[in-house]
Image (cartoon, rainbow, N blue to C red; front, side):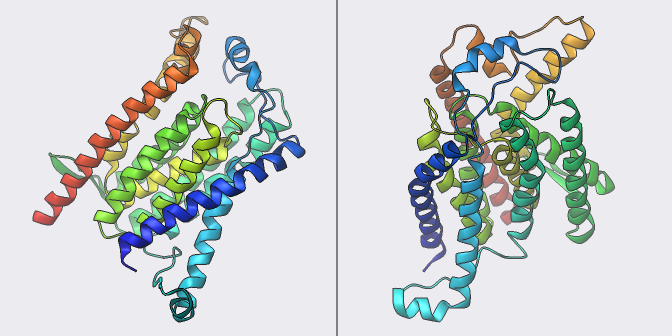
Length: 358
């Protein structure tokens, strides 16, 4: 099979496998009462208005990350078998897969990030479901420290083993930052990972935006000749499409923190691998904007004796509080997200063409 056929096959298989399994997994979550909890406690003061708006979502199954991440790694394992017994499958099914998704040059870092960052937030998701702990502040500090440690290890690997020392600024220059690449890498991974978690507050919102971003990077990695990494992107796209089928309002289940954090951290790693950081900053502008709204809100509360800029932060909840319907907010942010993804894709392709010409 040619590379494009393989990519489309992974997309279709990932979608149908996820789509078929999710209803059974939702029953599993309901049986063990792994439902979403809406608390009034927040990192800074109370979140009573937010709790009122989302009280009806209490009890909706969460921790849906389990089945999604499970399917990704099952497909990785199956691809290893297909590669190992390639001749057998070619004779029986008349097709061959020469490369597995477990590839040192392309997918090790991405899969490692997906698994490691997911593990960091596993305990947090369980604590939230079981309502362990009155406040999130102490555990939030621990999570941040763990994420910084992971990002630091990744930064050292990119800098010392892969010799990454520069950032490509589209249409201008290649900025050689040398050792500063390490703190910049840590900042990007930590900030990006948390930004999706902040945006994940309305049915389908974060999932749809992630879908657009991973679609862009499926194109970028394919155009750069990273076919195996592109296949991993297509698998994630397939699982996201199936997830959104059950997550748009009214959501049948939620992903939880693990999925949103690990997916965006993985995408940040892909951006660093392909030297397209600026593309990710464009396609992920909504996530960045939502994070900035939280930073502004917290800063205002601390410096102005509790006075707020927004009714609720992040910004999508502010829109909800002033009367916008959940569906309107999601669809309009999706539209903006699609425009940003298109711009990012055009810039990403132009960077590739420019590099080829040079």
